[in-house]
Image (cartoon, rainbow, N blue to C red):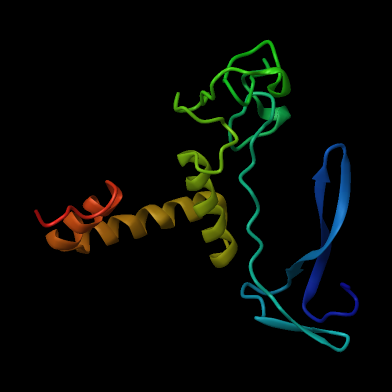
Length: 171
């Protein structure tokens, strides 16, 4: 692919894990030689859409914490992803979900977990705008600050009401 497609410097196929097997998918991640990739490419007789690849946030499966792997882990003891305690693994765990991060009533692997969602937004921003994770985090903080400082009181109240489960009824 790299030799056939102009502007492509690297190509790799995405693999998914099905139990203990890794299976190749039909999706290919392409690296382009420009800051802004094209919106479409021609591959043979096909015209294919190009969109940013947003990876899942990195979570080390021993300590259940985000942003590092085995070589940088400061908590070498294994922790259950479901209950947040050590000494056993998830398939054997029947305890109620308890997050090791925020002590919430969800597993550390939950896709609705606030830290997962925050990391996902940062990775999406990085994929769409380039740069490093630190630059994406700083840019998002600036965008949030600008949004908050330019909101009117009415929109702030509406936003607050919507985040609390909807607008009140007119009684």
